[in-house]
Image (cartoon, rainbow, N blue to C red; front, side, top):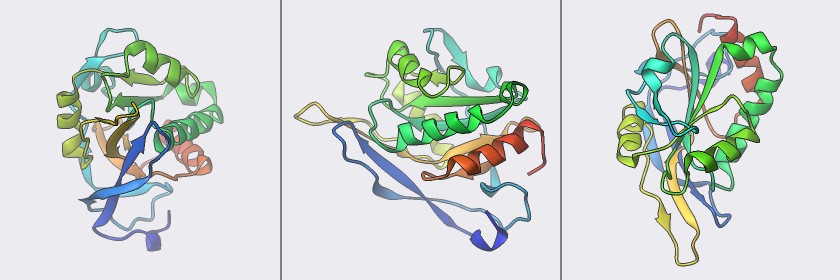
Length: 215
């Protein structure tokens, strides 16, 4: 993304995903400031560097996973969503998976991709693992107490709402659609990627992140 394309006070859209096939509705903006930059990165360079959430949930093996401790000093891409989402979640995670496949094994080893479920009642560790395996077998999936998830997402400017189950059984979970990239130097988020970010953009930036190129 060029400096000219960056504006102050950009709105981060929320995504309302429904397992019945609807989705992509704007559920309201969350304001986050971002700055013009001559960075080599195509993602949005954030002027406010968010702390990595202090969050402990179960991973896909059913074991406790301390996000902050387990990923300390590593580059992390973090996304909140749910497996029965028909649009934004599989598209975002799938695109990241394709981008990761374009990296060398050595580059991939330096990056952690973490998906936090916003629908833990249905996203069991087994369901989450099966879903993630189609995108990236090394991707980390976390599920558990929704109150913890909401509390972890809020300081990042990501609103997560309780899932709503319709009479026909379809599930709608409204959640922020952005991916945040945390850097190893300070374990803070420095880059933002919105829904619709292309595979080429992810691949370009993931290479830079893996090589430790400064934002």
